Length: 277
Ligand SMILES: Cc1cc2nc3c(=O)[nH]c(=O)nc-3n(C[C@H](O)[C@H](O)[C@H](O)COP(=O)(O)O)c2cc1C
Image 1 (cartoon, rainbow, N blue to C red):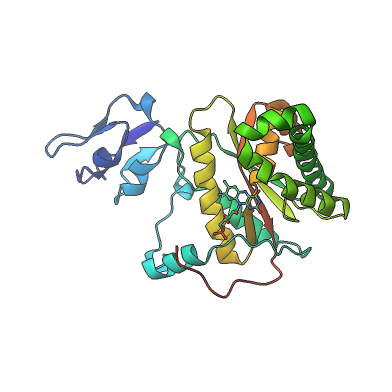
Image 2 (image 1 turned 90 degrees about the vertical axis):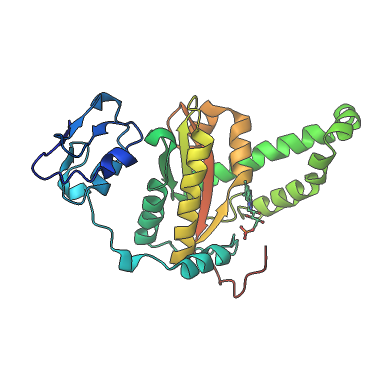
C-alpha cells in the first residue's frame, strides 16, 4: 500500500519529482494523493526523499529506512584513491577470508542498481573446497578440450586463418593445465571463495545488472584488503558448457546464467603504487 499522510506532508513535492513511475501527485493548495500505485517499482525513492516521514510505502518498514550519515561518506579524493588502487591481486593465500568481509562484499553487491529496480540478481558464494575444485576442474577441462580440438590437423589448417588470436592462447592453456596437474588452481587464481553473480537466463539486463553488482563488490573487497580477480576463464567455460551444466557446477538455479564471477582470497602482499591509465 502506498499513501501520503496529509497532516505530515509539507507539500514540498520532492516525492513527485523523484518517482520514476509518476505515482505521487503533490500540488500546493490541494491534498496530496497517489495515482496508479500498482505501477510502483519499489525503488524507495519516495520514502528516502521525504523529510517529514509523510510518505508511506508498505514495501519499506520503518526499520528498513535509514538516515544517511554524511560524515561517513568518503571524500571524492579518498574514493578516487580507492578506485585508483584497486587491482587484480593474484597472490591469493590459503588464509581464510573473514566472514565479516565476505558479508560486506555481498552487501555492497546488493546495493548496486538494477534495471527498473527488478533486483533479479542473485549472489551465490562458493567457499567449500570441493566445490571450488569442481569449478576449476570443469573450467580447465573445457579449455583443454578446446585446445585439443584447435590443434587437431584438419581443423587447425582452416581455423587458424579465422581464429588466429585464439591460437595465441593455446600455450597458456597448456601451462595452466600443467599447474592444475601440480595441484594448483590456475583458472580460479587459487581463490578461496568465488562470488557467482547470476540473473535469470531470459532477463534482458542480466549482463548489466550483474556487472554493476560486481563493481560495487570489487571496490568493497579492495577497501577491506581482500584480493579480487574477475573470473573470465570460468565464465567463458561455463557459458560454453551450457546453462544447465554450468548451474549444476556453480550451485545456482537451473534457469540462471552467471554473468559475472569474482575470485576472492587473502593476498600475500599488497600493491604499493598505481600506474597512470
Ligand atoms: C571481463 C574480464 C575478464 C577477466 N578474466 C580474467 C581471468 O580469467 N583470469 C585473470 O587472472 N584475470 C582476469 N581478468 C583481470 C584482468 O586481467 C585485469 O582486470 C586487467 O589486467 C587489469 O588489471 P587490474 O584489475 O589490476 O586493474 C579479467 C578482467 C575482466 C574485466
